[in-house]
Amino acid sequence: MNILTRRQWLSNAGMTVLASKATLLGMTRRRSPEWLMIVWCAHSVARAQELKVRFDQSYVKQMIRHCFDHGVRSILWRGSYVGKLTYPSRTGETMGQLEADHFARQGFAGKGWEQTLASFNSIAEVTSEFDSLKVALDEVHRLGMRLYADIALFDRFFPGLENRFFDEHPECWVLARDQKTYYRGIPCYAEPAAQNYVLSEIEELLACGVDGISLSLESHAGHLEVFGAGGKRPDEFGFNPPVVASYQRKHGIDIRKQPFESARLYAVNGQLFSDFLRRIHRVLNGRRLLVATTLDGYVGYGGVGGLQSGERTWRRRQPLDVMPAYRVDLEWDRWMAEGIADGLMVYAPVGEAIAQVQKIKKRLPEHPVYLIRETDSQKYQKDYRREFEKVSAGLLDGIVIDEMKDYHPHPQPWCRLLPADSLRSARARMASGQRTVECG
Image 1 (cartoon, helix red, strand yellow):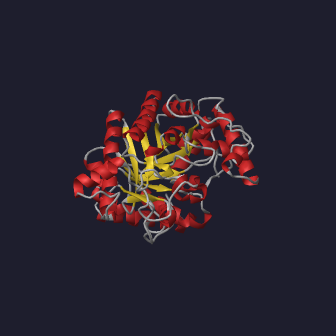
Image 2: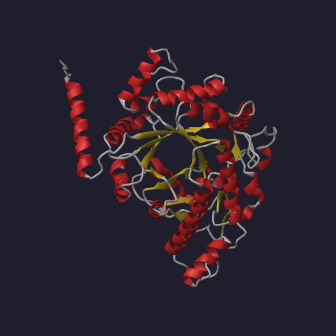
Image 3: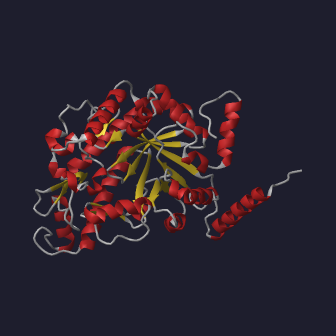
């Protein structure tokens, strides 16, 4: 006889209600929810060093196996560290040793910068010892998982992690109206040279054997005016020649010299960005593409608006008070309708995230729609729990967990958020001798 405790009965009843809501919404689960994990290699190295654990091939394999044991079946491996890479590359620039006066030459001094120098050099040393991307790929494929190479498209500058290509081609940063002043760190993907650089990155990753590409929107340069990296006023950037030409063709106005409508500029930026995604889709030649978007349907960087845009990614529930210095509309409905992307990843602040992302899912019933969620804030653990329960009940296709930095100590917050059956499966494998990392 199966006797349920009161807590178990209430839990089961709650999940039944959630499933019923999914049915009423016309979104009954056709498949089990997907759990995807972002692994940012450089952050994982830094965390291992904080814990005085050696980051080596065994460490990488154990990270992957730990994710697998919890039901994660796709890894989004971010091998870049802003403008540098943590894996061997002929296209990009791999992290190397910075000279002792690297930051001082740029006018940055103090104990914090000394610590940053030591950290960056230590990460560079560790990642030069083996090809972490290859090790991760081999382990992922051994376990029957997928590995997407995650590219943060607008994260190309932080002191010490400069991107050589874009710094040597400043016309590929987003430009001000004078077409000379640039926003360092935020590329303009209307520029063919900027597109070609990323396509070369992708082609190299495909040759390594990745199963697909994921495109993220996070950026260290979102509000870096203190480093001379960005703007302060709305619509201060985004006047690159291809954008100017496109706006003039559509609306008959030279936005460098004449008043213009901001909404039209944002739309032009979005259309040109979609053109770029079409090129990526063709290069992938059948391999999968996941693309991030926001609830508001645009992304922006620079100034107060850029700061609020970053906050809106995770916690800010109210719309922006002021537009960023650079904004690009995200035509996610067009991407999916044309088959440019295979899945959509949505940034949404905690609180009503599931209900908000469901509005997008309703418009894309045949396509995977995932919530992107950080899970390490103690303040929001109850919110995270509710979100994971709702996704487990079928209200969305899955969650992209941002991010796994390490597997010590146990359990991490995300470990407890995944369904209990995932952990039971992990414990069963451990009991049978397939022991990896045990969670409490």
